[in-house]
Each structure stands twice: as C-alpha cells, then as structure tokens.
Length: 94
Image (tube, rainbow, N blue to C red; front, side, top):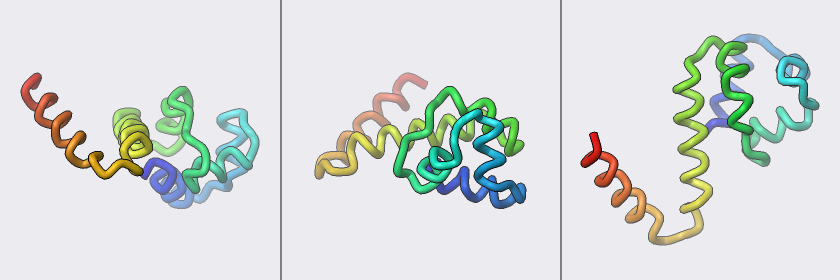
C-alpha cells in the first residue's frame, strides 16, 4: 500500500530513486525496498516524503498505519474479524 503509493508519487514527479535517497539521506537500496514493500518505511521519513511529493502527511501516515495493521493480521484467518471489532470500537469513540 504505502510502498506502491510512494513509487507512484516518485514516478509522477519524475524523480529517480537516488534523488529520493539523497533527500532522505539513505541509500538507494532502501528506497527500492520501501517501494517494493520489502522493508517497512520508517515513520520519521513521512514528513520529508510528504514535502518532496506534495501530499499531506496524514495521507502517508494513514497508509503507514494500514501497512502496520496488515502486517499484523495478514497471516491470521481471524484478521478480518479482529479489524471489524476494532472498527466498531473506534466508531464508538467518535
């Protein structure tokens, strides 16, 4: 989710992975792994990525959080039921 979004944003801006890596002060391999979802995106990079790509931090944070939830429940057959329970709980707090 987040990796795919970051790749599409980078491509839409016409940036190379090495340019994004330089902006984040990381190596190009990290950007490649982030975009392919082989390595999780550090939350601390979201503000810089937001500015670089011209999108809101909250959009990237939402995708970041969705990735975290997905990683926790993806291999559990009760994952959807657990997410539904959490959704109901969150709706009650709004």
